[in-house]
Image (cartoon, rainbow, N blue to C red; front, side, top):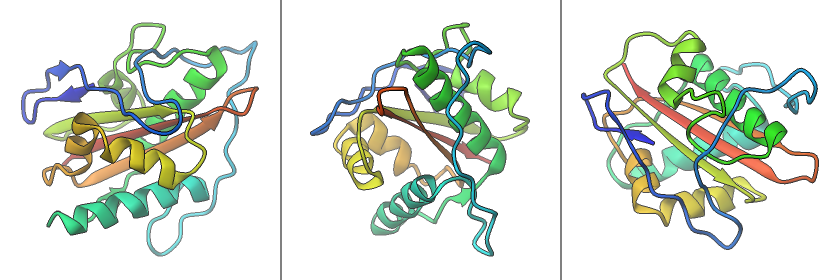
Length: 179
């Protein structure tokens, strides 16, 4: 889903196409009976990195694309990362693929639940099956809706989460915000 800038109204976002399976909406919260995959989290560095090496590489690639388009770099936001990882882990644990959690929560609900407040716009990209940050970025950049979120110069914050299901399939989420 994406939000029309400034409106706070979610609208469906196209799914990405790629050499590997692409994004499609559906998502619930991890259940106690099937724990969500845990990422290896690196300590924040001077550059404000949070999350796994894969998540940080996605942010680097996003900022590389944004620079080509004349947009400023996005800053890592730990609350957006919490929302993004939680959604990826939930999809991986429960085997669905959607912007809407199985409990009915939207990406905006998850972002708020992670403690993010304020802001004047939000968006989310999801993907499933890509094995590397480069592959998932290629998928998103080849999809007009996902590319529009990445290249929206209004956004200045990002959180990325990646989780693996029991068969090794990766679920990717990017949450964007403007503050």
